[in-house]
Image 1 (spheres, helix red, strand yellow):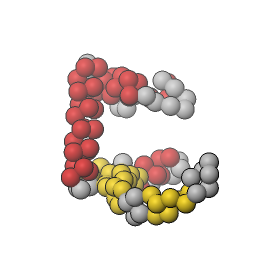
Image 2 (cartoon, helix red, strand yellow; image 1 turned 90 degrees about the vertical axis):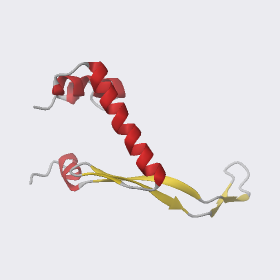
Image 3 (cartoon, one colour; image 1 turned 60 degrees about the horizontal axis):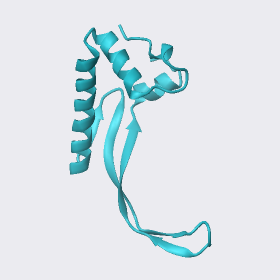
Length: 106
């Protein structure tokens, strides 16, 4: 049974509150829940940094992407400037997650 994370805050859930919810749901200590969450985050970061994607069925997919070089403008002066190409992190929500947010039933 999942803990009701909505009891912690209406609009925002911080890491400490997420850890408390995981600990309560899994009936483990907050220290073990924090270790597990930190480990999961670390593994996702390592994989995406290497160029791999991480797919969590029902939740979503983390992947790296490329942002091409482009021209921009300095907002203060309006002067054109070149913005270098860069890597970026992408998250694509899974269908079950999207459906839950939109309150759609299966």
